[in-house]
Amino acid sequence: MDKKAIVLYSGGLDSTTCMAIAASEGFTTYAMSFSYGQRHSRELEVAMSNATRAGAAQHMVVEFDLRLIGGSALTSGVEVPKNGVTSGIPVTYVPARNTIFLSFALGWGETIGAQDIFIGVNAVDYSGYPDCRPEYIASFEKMANLATRSGVEGHGFRIHTPLINMTKGEIIKAGLSLGVDYSLTHSCYDPSPEGISCGLCDSCRLRLKGFAEAGIPDPLTYQPLSQQ
Amino acid sequence: MDKKAIVLYSGGLDSTTCMAIAASEGFTTYAMSFSYGQRHSRELEVAMSNATRAGAAQHMVVEFDLRLIGGSALTSGVEVPKNGVTSGIPVTYVPARNTIFLSFALGWGETIGAQDIFIGVNAVDYSGYPDCRPEYIASFEKMANLATRSGVEGHGFRIHTPLINMTKGEIIKAGLSLGVDYSLTHSCYDPSPEGISCGLCDSCRLRLKGFAEAGIPDPLTYQPLSQQ
Image 1 (cartoon, rainbow over the protein chains, first blue to last red):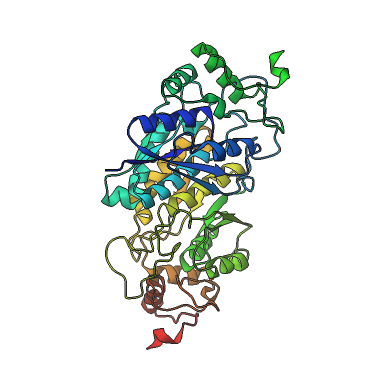
Image 2: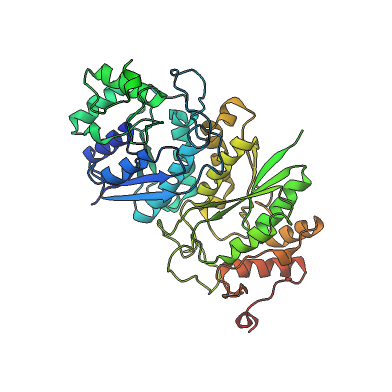
């Protein structure tokens, strides 16, 4: 029988690896992306052009505007910080974002009969977001099975977080072993108009640290400033 | 201090009553509605024109298209049933709808400092939706407080369901005692192009039963068929 999984897919390093892992576990993958008014349309462009190449049987892009809600450097005029990863919840935190994303995944999952949802959250090399922690994911899963027909009448939803305990370096090594082409991924929070990564935001720093850890050069090019 | 609450507001009987109850508890109310591709735009029109009259300090309408996801008579071509309320989860169930709505409310609540969210779900005279049950709401609240900055650093979110154990008749009586004008509410799943309620869908039937229980005439007019 066809085993379907929804994979939350941003076009980034983590979600692309996550999709490869879902496929390696025998799932037919249904990629879901969100156009939510993020500052950088680059991320979404990458997702749109690469979802099928990354193995998705189908790709859905859901649109809504989190700029109405604001509260984050990623959806408002607040500057993206570039002075290194700090402790606490950073200004790039988008209120309730993963909860909103997973909720739409639940809806699609109910409709196509996919009760497995993959999300590439990470609690090791992460940015301090509360909605990337294992206790959050476990709680969402419990809620999901009370919220839905599949939870009440079916086998129930399972939220898979294969990357949650991996370092960035381990994620990259896992992806490479599954054939992921990281030149087709994008991570930067604040790329140039041409889509070139800044090399300085939290997301670029974590990515570069990951490639350094894995002992492999990052196939992306970066803006000159980061080479200083 | 200003006590703010988000109220999920559809323009219907329940959510309008819910907003009046939130105000009577001392909250400044922030109404949130959704344009999600529902069959009947009438519900949203009612919400747009009446939110402020119903007491909201601000009204936000979030747009997205659940027709992409489908799976419900309310968002697809499936016929809305008109032969009475049946047992089990009906075809008007919209996969993950309340979870999606509450997730957006969490996001807005984080941003404006409202940690109280009101939702007019009802587990007595309800339509058999899994996401209207008290155990679902309790589970969502727990998840919300792991998902968010307010949950981790603040007082935490509370999901209020003042109507959950009330019959439709009790809801109407409570609303009338708080001055709710039910001629400004809309309940029908399948109104005529002019916005006249059908009187036959589950939602109309529950509403009419409620007014009958309360011993008060419904101020709405209905299509002639329902008078047979």
